[in-house]
Length: 166
Image 1 (cartoon, rainbow, N blue to C red):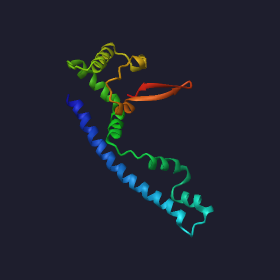
Image 2 (tube, rainbow, N blue to C red):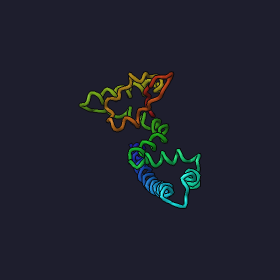
Image 3 (cartoon, rainbow, N blue to C red):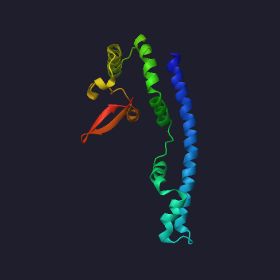
Image 4 (cartoon, rainbow, N blue to C red):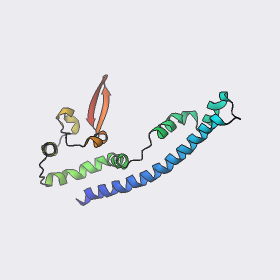
């Protein structure tokens, strides 16, 4: 349990540090965007020179990423918490297996009971998650707001499929 609590505490530290860095980065991006927008009201910059002047501030090859950073800054704790879990997923999976198998779970939620039973069976059979069909993995217990961190939608052969994200 100490190992699991360690992951939770480390995720807290990681997300706080990451949000701090993201807020600083976001402010820098906003200042750069303001500089680019101010070119439009600068009488010394001809309309035909706007792109060239903008690319002098942010190089053209970096512009798409710059726009993405402005459009969707990652300032929520969940984003960084789940990024940490994803980065550490291999170690977490290795360390949680024995703990999960040793605990006796009690719940009144049938969806959670189904998921616990599935995971215990999964651990006991030493299968890979890729051996399971997505439809067979119980996900009903996952709160809708967290599903995007746990389930990855991919396109294969022109159709969308969902896969577990861990």
